[in-house]
Image 1: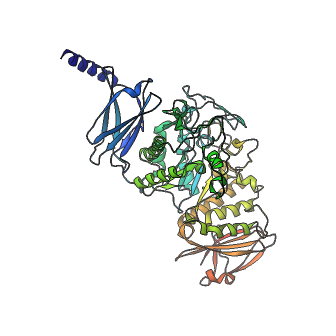
Image 2: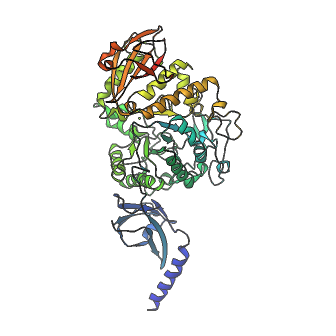
Length: 583
């Protein structure tokens, strides 16, 4: 009897002390009632090697502890929790009992958001115009979060393209009206999760994780971007402006400072090799019917670079961890879609599973991947015609995301030799072809550069987004005549597309190019848009009757850029592009 009373007293003392601070770290850090994914596997990390020997008790109405899993690393256990349909929001009590002590940990179980498919998890469709930006390089709206002493990289230096520059989520919030003016309906941000990594030695030198692809904690938004609160603020503010948010997912790898590698529950959480093995980066090894298993393994399991351990998605615990994080993120922050990075390096069965889980709980969510050459039999606009002719390979080609450049490519303006005619041609294609257009930040204001000597050169700061900038390209008065010409052209195309369903989800008809002249149509039951690209060196005469299959009921056409009516016969100059609404 005395021993029982003693144990009870000790337990109560330990309980009261440990209730003020978490005794262990839980992943996911919380969950939600009413989810289709109601069998949640919680990874628990304790503070000492024998943690897996502790007895565990879960006390909460509607939550049942079904099984406890242990790992070779004694700091970890996994809890299989079943959350019933009648469970209510609250704090789930999880007790860890060891050496006559009871330590209490609270795991929040929250109510779900309202408005799935309407106010969040809306998905990105071919009605949208997606704008890709890199938070560190777009705008610095809060200089107080530029440096964090607790992080391994505290350097902020805008004079070099491979270090952090200080851009953040508040900077994006400050320019939501700019996106509205341009006609943007969705923002795709490179990753915002914590990248607590030191500078790493790459070909370009000692590089920072400013781009966001070196995750070290899936359940924390990087404090240099403003942290969790700033991300929630951005999502809410963007939604209030009619703008969706697409988050960049990375399932393939983590940063080498992530606990998944440094202190993994078991070694097989990342793909192991006897010596460092890089991926061969050849997707042909996966697609070839003659490919060797050895080459497939190196493609899938080889590491991207030495400081990015390759995640083993075939490990069921790892798969659950990644799937649950994706589900949790949509519900916690209210994002609208995912862009999956390094998709081809991931295990196919895992990708199918995570995509199915996301679509089950969020049915409307989206998960998402020629001009510069002269006309020839298989080049120039003929190559474009041939590419579009292969749309039969896609189940739904209208869902493809199309683009001219991104953060891993040479900037479009430089690739076309800073030729405004080619710029207009590229933008016209981007906003009138089937699919969902996405534009890389700054391309609309003529930002240019090649990846020389490194990727950072195509990831420079948006002028005017940072304190002390001499020029502000967010406003017309701060742009040159050439920059305003570029901006206004994109603005007119994007906003025209926003108002005309024929360019969003209408059908397409293209005519074989002749002597560098390429003509195609986007149309539905109510309207027809005609696109004319003259890539030749001489002016061409156009007669609507020559395209009677699509134009027989129309007598004239209006230029959507100038607003002028061009009649049923008109001329298109050499290197000129026309986008016309038939009347």
